[in-house]
Amino acid sequence: MATTTEGTPQSTNLLDGYFRLGERGSNVGRELRGGLATFFTMAYIIVLNPLILSSGHDKYGHTLSFAQLSAATAFVAALMTIIMGLGGNLPLAIAAGLGLDSVVAFQIAPTMSWPDAMGLVVIEGLGICFLVVTGLRQIIMDAIPLPLKQAISVGIGLFIAFIGLADAGFVGKNVPLVGLGSAGTNELTGWPVVVFCVGLLLTITLLTRRVPGAILLSIIVTTVLAMIIDAVATVPAPKGNSEWGLQIPTWPGHATSTPDLHLLFRFSLGGGFTHAGVITAIVFIFTLILSDFFDAMGTIVGISNEAGLLDEQGRVPNIGRVLFIDGLAAVAGGAASVSSNTAFIESAAGVGEGARTGIASIFTGLFFVVALFFTPLYSMVPAAAATPALVAVGFLLMTQVKGIPWDDWAIAIPCFLTMVLMPFTYSITNGIGAGFISYVVLRTVQGRWREPHVLLWGIAVLFAAYFALHPIKQALGVA
Image 1 (cartoon, rainbow, N blue to C red):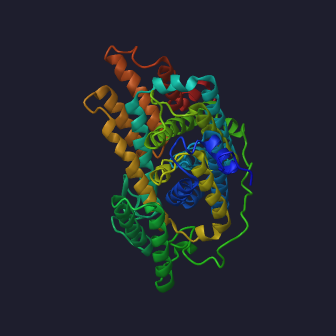
Image 2 (image 1 turned 60 degrees about the vertical axis):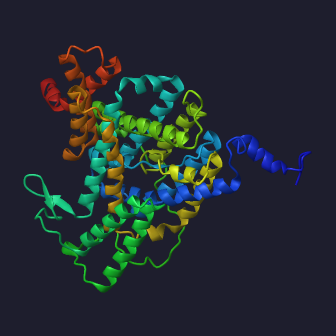
Image 3 (image 1 turned 120 degrees about the vertical axis):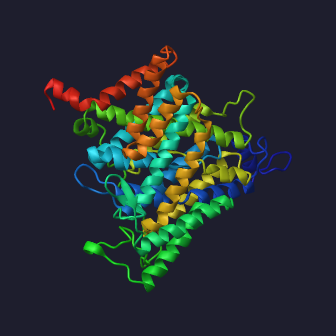
C-alpha cells in the first residue's frame, strides 16, 4: 500500500481528507460502532412500514404485499443512507417516514390506486428538491409559526398511536365513537390483545430505561411471545381469518430469501390528478411536503447539533446538499412504492456512539443491504407485536406539545384543532387545514391580519377550497 512521507497509509488519508475524520475527532472504528447503533435502533422500520402500508386499501380495494414492502423498504433505506453518507457527510440515516406512510396508506391511497398515490410521493420529493434549489425553503420555514409546526408533529403522533391501538384490536368502532376492545364492547378479548399489552408495557419500560434499540428489542421479544402462544394455545380464526391478522407468528420455513423488488418503479405521476381531482391531489402533495420538509429540518439540525457539527451561526454543514438528498429520498420512496423516505431521528444513537461523519451512514446502509435477504423473518411479526412501537412513537412526537404557547389562544386553538382533528377525522390533511384556516381567521379578528405570511394566507385559501370541494362542485353543476 502506498504511504505518505509520514508513513500514514494513503487510503486512510483519503478517508480523512474527504470525510474529515480527524477534524471531527472520529475514526473508522467509532463510525462503525455508530453505524451499527443507528441501524439497530431503526431496523424496526423494515417491519412497521410494511405493516402500515399493507393495512391500507386503495380505491379499488387492492393491497400491497408485506414481503415486497419489507424488501423495498430495506432497499431504499440502504441506497439513500449510503448516498447521504457520501454526499452529505453526516451521520444521518434515511428510511421510510412514520407518519408519512400513514398519510399515504389511510388518506391518499383510498382515493386512487397505489401507483397513483406513490406518484404523488415522487412529485412531493421533486417539490422538496425544487424548494431547496430555488431557495424557497427559508421562505416557507418563516411563513409557518413554530407552534403550528410542533402541533403538526403532535397530531401525527396521536394519529399514529390511534392506528397502533386500532390495528392491535385494543380499541374498535363503537357508537358513537370508539370503545375498548376490537368490537368496541369495552372488553379486551383474544390472545393478540394480550401480546399487544405485554409489548406496550415492555416498549415503554425499555424506553424509560433508555435501553439502546428499545423498539426493536420489544418487537423481537413480543414476536417470540406470540410464537409461543400460537404454538400452545388455540387462537380462533373468525370468518376464516386469524385473529393475528395478515402476519401470523409462525416460522416461515427459512430465514433468508432473494429480495423481491417487484414494487420498484410501479408509480404513476399523473393518475392521482385524474382519479382524485386536481385540488385534492395538490392538497395531498402539499401535506406530504409540509410534513416531510419540517420533520427533516428538525431532525437534521438536531442530529448535527448533538454531534457538535453546527458552525458559529448554528448552520448545518452542506445543508443545501443534505436537504436535496433528503428530497431525493422522498422520490426514491415513491418510486419504490414504500412512501416518502426522510432523515431518521434514531441517527442520534449513532452520534451517541461517537459517529461524526458520513462513514457511519455508509455502514448503516450496508447493514440494511444485509437485512434485504432476511425478509422471511419479518413476515412472522404479527401486528400485535409491532403496533406497540406505533404508540411509543406517538408519545415521542407528543413531547413537542410543551413548546406551544397555550396562553395565546389565537395560536393555541389552531394548534389544538390541528392535533385533535388528525386522529378524530382519521386524516392528517384535515388537521393541518383546520389549523391553518383557524390561525389566519383568529389573527384577523384580533386586527393582526398582517401577521400571517402571505404564503400562509394562500395555503389557507387552498385548504378552504379543499374543504368546500363538494359544495363548489354542486354550484358548478359537476357534483
